[in-house]
Length: 127
Length: 287
Image (cartoon, rainbow over all chains, first blue to last red):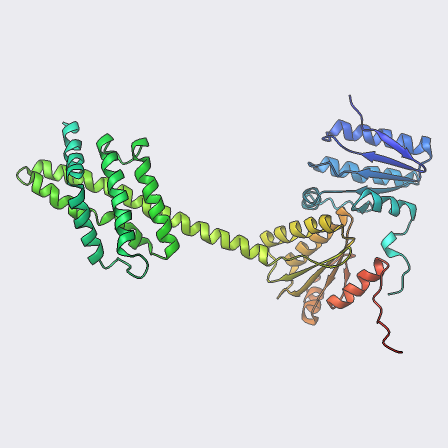
């Protein structure tokens, strides 16, 4: 069975989903990722879903679960590059992924991870 | 002998095509349903000639009124209906084009078969049924074209009413004007999300100054749009909340959740600039 590669970039783990997700693949990713967070002592996980075109309730829930597990293991999760259609589907399914941080591009996602705990956009700039 | 019946009318139309055309034209020119302001005589004659020519050809092959032999007649009728629908004819005026052919044909049938009432009745019935079928087709095409126009206008209105404007680098705004219903929310959401991707916007401002009332359903729709934008990585600010709307929202017990709200678009814009770490300063004119 094929697996989704997990890349290590410094203290962060990078996951790029480039194939159609099915349930077993999602569960395998969840397994691999939690193991890697522990073994690599990762501080953050960036999941790029810009190639993901179809998402169902199970996938949405799994994404939320991964973020929850990562948080317990003391790592931030940022989901980047969600397509408009996918976002609409998730909202219509009632899955607004509370607790998952999101960013538009990988670049912005990395900025978000590097500024732990604080949204980059919430920096203390005078108005 | 059906073969004979058919060739009766078919031959008549073929041999007397020009006479029928002249008489038909005369009738159409005199008829009340003619619109001299919309179509002139030569155009009318061209239409009539084209129809009669294909009609005559098709009649030679079959008298059914459908099938591939009648495809060219149908295409002529489609063209006629389409141009008339665009020019502003009514449905009746469009259909009369075909129905007015009955009179010249029936006159000729009576001359041909006047001594044979059975045959005459038979021929008239067949011809009448055939022309009715063609007439109905013009009405159908006409109606379809009008419906296309309505659909297109509806779509254009939806598009026009949801402009997403770029306020600043990375800040987009969506002024919503009019009532938000489900289908509209769908379009609003799609355009907003699409523009967020295109502009790589970190902040989206939804301005509801132009929304007359906010009930629980509208609030829910707004929250959906905000949630979808957040999933893509953009923050949403809702602005333009009028005092009455604020009262309604609280009285209805609607919860806008953790969405940031501002009274005016200017406030929202200032907040958006602050969040993206930018500010607008007055150019010093002193000195």
